[in-house]
Image 1 (cartoon, rainbow, N blue to C red):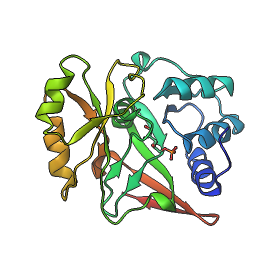
Image 2: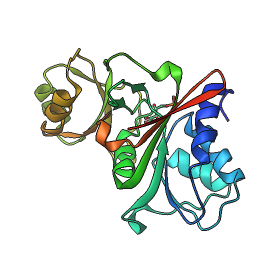
Image 3: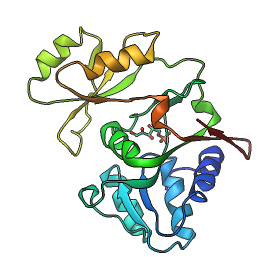
Length: 216
Ligand code: 5RP
């Protein structure tokens, strides 16, 4: 378990209360989710079916007795809960600090309710670089050329579980929607860490022991 962080813990514990017995649950990745897993396990809910967005989360959840299964077995989730790197006032979110953004977006998109859990320090006035990317290994130099020198491969990072190369878009931008569309249209980009407001249902923001619950 990582060092205690009262805000991350408070947001995660509030999110754990949104899960009910019998739900199909998407589990995110990162240090905030590391507080969610024991809080969820401690609830003693029955009939949960969990999908993990990373091997790390799958291992932690399984060790706590949460039933994790392959995402191949489920086409829809009731709820997914995950941390974030940036949350803008209009609901745009940046994820992928841990390099798991492709699987995180797939799980979020499968969920009827996607809940973002953050400490107040993740709130930003406007999204800013870096924006995490996952790139195809095949033809990587040509993909980087198409990205116009505005992307850098993360040095020393292992490939994603899907064999993607973890990188970051590093240039300044004004319009997240335009950048998301541009990245999605760039051949060789598997996915990016820009999550549009339509993907998120709730944001739980913790500060000094209080949790603000924003419904989008
Ligand atoms: C991993 C993620 C994480 O959710 C994000 O980086 C936040 O991490 P943390 O909870 O450790 O602050 O997107 O890919």
